[in-house]
Amino acid sequence: MIEARGLTKTFGRTMAVEDLSFTVRPGGVTGFLGPNGAGKSTTMRMLLGLDNPTRGEALINGRPYRQLDRPLTQVGALLDANWIHPNRSARAHLRYLAASNRIPARRVDEVLETVGLTAVARRAAGKFSLGMKQRLGLAGALLGDPKVLLFDEPVNGLDPEGIFWVRNFMKSLAAEGRTVLVSSHLLSEMALTADHLIVIGRGRMIAEASTADFIARS
Ligand code: ADP
Ligand code: ADP
Image (tube, rainbow, N blue to C red; front, side):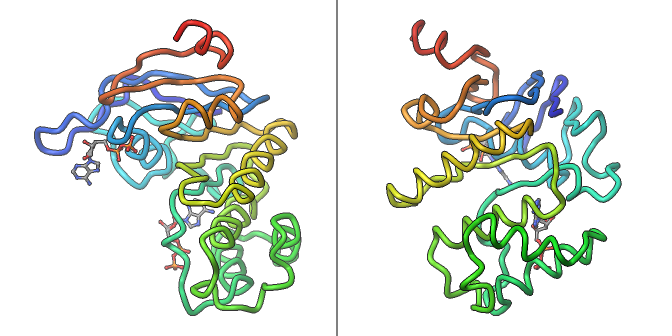
């Protein structure tokens, strides 16, 4: 489960996230929709323990990220592809992540297969296309077989084929009973991906509804 309770973040005078409260439950993809600068990344970063809330709580399975035992077994995330070491091979990158979370090494080959990177597993990730980097990021997110997944603008910059693949991949993860939260600034994309929407603007909650209801009303 993913939960925000009165979640607030200020950067100097900028109110990036203001008193946000929501719960994301399993069974379906939940879209986190809002224009650029609305506070989506900041919210996800707080959920992942990469930023501290100014006020309120960001919880995964009832706890702040930093209190999670073996976090990658509880939550996986795709924030951006930049954290991949350019000189490390895809397999070495995943082995390193696995080792640091006491995840069995055999999972590395399983997730490479899941995202379709087995054939290029020995190549340096720095030479990967954006679509391949996204797949490697997804492999990392799945390594610990977490029930909770957070994806920040995962289709940005991808070609149509890549977008189609990532979209269906997220749906299949939700169909397995995982809790999936995916951010986007495009209603048109979320209409094709999400069952449920949490809509924010300027850091504040605007709506929470099924995607069908939200579109019927807007
Ligand atoms: P989104 O992901 O919806 O595009 P962000 O969470 O990235 O929005 O940004 C929300 C607001 O917070 C924006 O006004 C942005 O400029 C500001 N912001 C985000 N990160 C920082 C930071 N590290 N320092 C200062 N301002 C920031
Ligand atoms: P490096 O390869 O430089 O040692 P890491 O692989 O540890 O760096 O990752 C860099 C950042 O990305 C860290 O903040 C880490 O928490 C985050 N990160 C890496 N993989 C994941 C993942 N699968 N899910 C969530 N966060 C991740």
